[in-house]
Length: 375
Image (cartoon, rainbow, N blue to C red; front, side, top):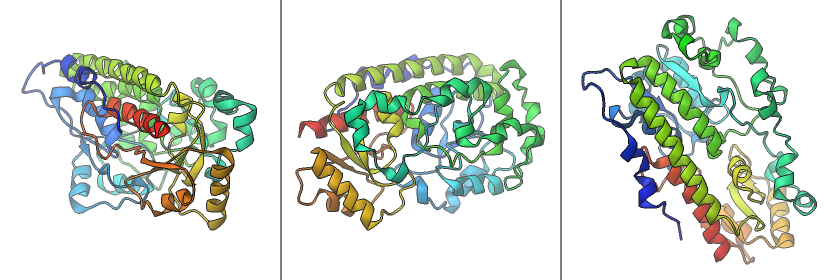
């Protein structure tokens, strides 16, 4: 049974959103790639406007094909917030060809964003769970990216482009707005990385599902607010108040999720694809692996056999399908076992898009894991 976020929490963003200062004020046209990011943008825009979400929540961004109507929406956007090349390369190519006048922000290129490397073979080493536990497994990553964010020294992700932004040596994207970006006046924010977002860096060395780490989402709210205020300074105070309310709503959702997951930390799960590492890190959830890797590539027979061995040996109780993918592979792993099968959806296809979407997503994921553990 899915846990529904409380009505008071659902309405917290909307209740705090201020009214527009002027109905005549021009708000920017905004587009995002995925619904979760669209929800964050919507929470900051409030009553001033609604972002266009290009990728429907029931479609996997890993193999998304853009329709003409979606291409038109992208081409009409003044501001584009997206999750970067590693999640959906086709979206980057579409931005390059269709949105040459837009200001583009890659969320994974924002200073302070937690980036974790992908797991090898989408399987977690069983001995790590026994010897160290979930928290210690997380510590093995050393969060080098946290310690190095200020210096942009992300060697593990090969982000050499941080040192080369001034050269704009990304010919494949060739965005004309690079030459014009200084006209946006980012000096008041002193966020030099904003002037560099349009480079669309390839984050192939990192797990792309960064929106499932709530602290990343809260960090991004500040950048979304600043970008909107820069394009629409008359309503800057509204964007700031809305961002504060949205951050508070995320905090409340995290608290509710932690309560739901209080008894789930030692109960390992198996997911359809390796998309939940950030959520596992945030909430100390133990995963024994995934059927498919972080890009949802089809698994090999040997991978499936190894996963079934792990399930049997460790007494795993839950396996999660996703609505964007064929459930038959999940059924194959669960066949002949005591696994409880449920749905875990990183895109929240059954949730209502809008300003309350992101807090609802966090609580929904926690409720799904908790409920499966109870079966």
